[in-house]
Image (tube, rainbow over all chains, first blue to last red; front, top):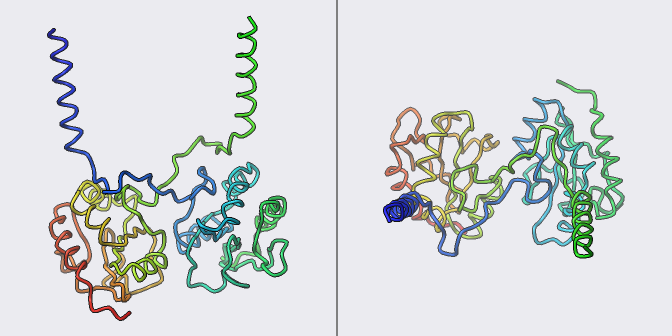
Length: 168
Length: 168
């Protein structure tokens, strides 16, 4: 009986303390915090902004991959799945690249050499040169990739990995 | 015996399929994905970049709060705790503001009127005017806040909530 009472007291204490430290919860209910990966590779360390990506790229002497996408674009969503599930792509990105995914365009026009479509992938050298020479398979959207294009992307990652002559 | 065999077959199938779809894991071990909140309020919907924050601010006619911080700055970390645990601050931010936290400076000098120290909080009106008139308690670092300054911050949030005459 005493044990029962103690257990009950502990439970009441637990609930009281828990309520006291409970954090803000929106009226519409608890939300799942958004990750920086946005599903493009949960094990990669994503830069948050272009400025941050450029800083890491220069300081670690690794090329930067900038990926533009939209949550309500079916092409982006389909490509995201093959991209995130491709172990070779994820491994080379993790080991040899600085990665950034963006849903909003930056003010830098060098990142949209032929328009602001999505999904679109640009590479930037540590010397801060946008590698406009590294492109996909579509003449009218040079930096677009579709679900069948992971071999092309892997080839481009190998190409981008060989840095231009660094100006640093 | 047959049931046992079936169960075993199913287990083997499960393990095989699971291994086949297992995603990339870094050599250094599995990582916890970084959230956009970075601990400043997991229930808030954080913008990723300044461009994104400005877009949301204009389109929803809500002021933007830009918070600069660093993971290895003890002042930032101490202030983060009181900031994230303050229900009033979290509630007003969730309901009436667009929020952005950054660890790297933007190229916009209007966001560092008196220097690039952290932690530092600036407000931007939907008309894209930086509200340099809304500041904290320190004359030498006008936009700095310390752990005891949550009442001051709450007052500033109330002030920023009253929008300037919109130019839109």
